[in-house]
Image (cartoon, rainbow, N blue to C red; front, top):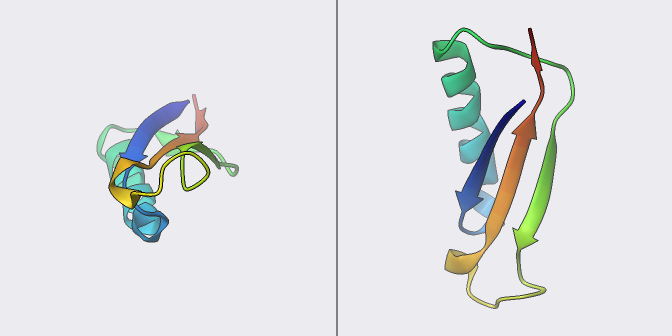
Length: 62
């Protein structure tokens, strides 16, 4: 499992996923088909997008 936490507004999530995918490839990992996001801190808890946190999770194939 590869995980990271993205800090910022939801509009930046595609770029964060791209960076995670680049890291996986650069480190010799093969991503599995599924993935998920966990919105740890979002507009439901904090009005400032700079304080939002989203956990990105991508299983890998051994």
